[in-house]
Image (cartoon, rainbow, N blue to C red; front, side):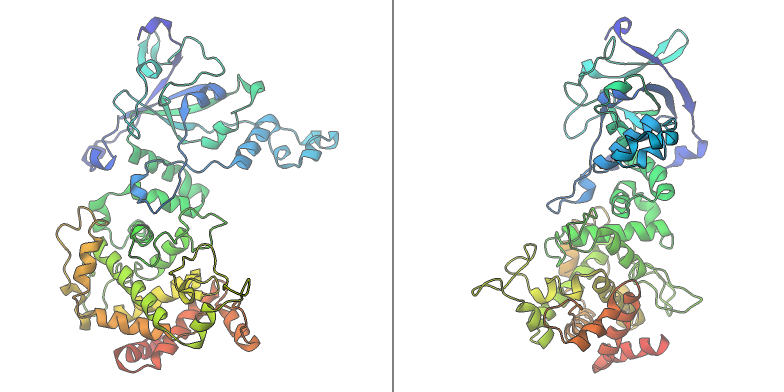
Length: 513
């Protein structure tokens, strides 16, 4: 590459590195290689920057483990990009007006400059970087070179022209600023409009996810499903294992368990969790699952209130120690518990379950079945009119299962179930081994008894067909955020009527409430 014939942009080098950062656990195998100790600042016309940039959009499909999907950006929201384009034209609040009002002289007084002073954050790919078995072509590389007055960004052409496109991967990866660039996709009148840029060089993909998180998730409160979707790329295994009480551990562990419940074939929730918060997907969202797990199994023990803690996150009140189960053990426990419940519901011949299996008919020959409920699936469990598949139902089951086990953890000697030594290296792959090991543990009888007791509860929602009016009104209490507490209380009251350890444990929990 001859330096003389290429377009060069002056850059400012920003040195940001502390001596202590050298002791951070950098790991190329986890897409977390040690980065350069500086980054760069420059500006480029927005349309030119767009053509140089690759923008990966996240897609969840076919139950593929999220950690194998290395894209970190959001799905493109055309309306958001269009609004940014209008903002650039005449600022706020003109950009939010209807098309008719924007065309009316009456509102010309609302026109303002549409400045975009916030930097686009990107990564400059090097010739060593590989993405999905592809690389930037030698002729398309953007490189940092020494200039007469300091460092410069050398671009892969003499002068940019509309229509320029890389032959393979684009030389830039956008970390933050995707929708700003989409806004300039067809803006022919804005060719000279520049955007400030913060550029990293050869930054590994996990650090890109970390930057996206620090820029967006906390201060801007973006879609929680996307936020949690990023967490697998932010793992620092040793730190997470040692920070059991930290909120990041709880959220991250809850995300990991949700992913396993969604992607493990034997799970009742295999491919039945709304991983991206899509409106047309009726299954409980990933965000809601994570919040429910963080509020139940992964919560810490509140010493002030004396309430039950989380089996996977709190400390046993009697033993004063954390249950030392690996991620694979925790996931195996949840899968076994949910599967036991599904089997108990499937075996139920109570009026509520039979009613859900015989919904109104579309014709004389076949009962109506939602498209997302397979032929072999039990409608008593998976019907849209079953509380089990609602946010409140998921939280209720997790609450009761956690609280009953937390209370009896010492008696059942849960810590005697030791993790497989191979589990820590690949917890998702170890779930099958841990499930086989779990089935031999004596305490699984307690899981089975809880599941059988819960299966005799009436799980129909208030919208279930042919529900008596009095019962329908009684079930309205489960709607909304107050429904979590009410459903937990009614499930415990229901179990307290049973004999044996389950009934007595439920009775003790009600006495403490």
